[in-house]
Each structure stands twice: as C-alpha cells, then as structure tokens.
Image 1 (cartoon, rainbow, N blue to C red):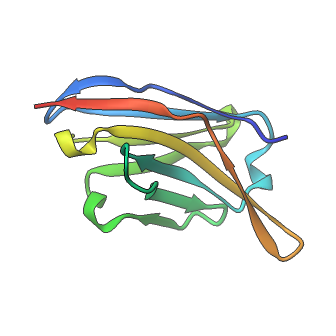
Image 2 (cartoon, rainbow, N blue to C red):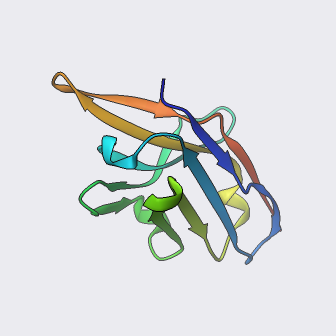
Image 3 (cartoon, helix red, strand yellow):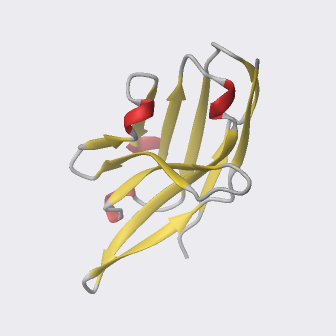
Length: 119
C-alpha cells in the first residue's frame, strides 16, 4: 500500500507564500508521476501540477509562474511552493502519485491539507 502524507497547510494572507510537503515511504523511483491537485467544496478536483520521473513538469495554466513543484528524493518528499497566493487558491490540496502497472496508471492520494487564503 502506497502511503502519501501531506503537511504544511494553513492560513495565509493574500499575497503571501506557503509550502506544502508530501512524504512517501517508498522509493520515488517507483512512481511515474508525482504532484498536487486541489478541490473546493462543490467542485471537481483539479490539477495543480505534476512532475514525472523524467523531470518534466506540467502545471495548470492559471497557476504557472506562481506555483512550483520540487522533489527531494533523499527525503522521499516533494513540495509545492505557492507564491502570491490569492483568496481563490483556498482549497484542500491533495498529494498525488501514480505507478505504471500492467498497461495502466494506478493513482494514489494523500488525505489532503487545507489551505486558506484570507483577503
């Protein structure tokens, strides 16, 4: 069972920064992609960004330039650096990873961490 544990959420003022962490307990070389999604009540979960095992990054267009994913393989952790935060960034942020297995990608999720941006 793949376990992902987020940390770093909280309350921040508009324009501020926050860094989320996602810790796993297996080698990240076993993952095809790692990243973050977010969800607001009543809406579908949406992509924030992912980074592949080859190092390629993909971000939601609306977040490019403000959000950055980085990886520390030695710590089995990846991060989401969020800058210039806006009230509309308020959401539950979920850590994500997937593994390629028998022709498909198996997704894994953390439990989520709340980020609240006050105006």
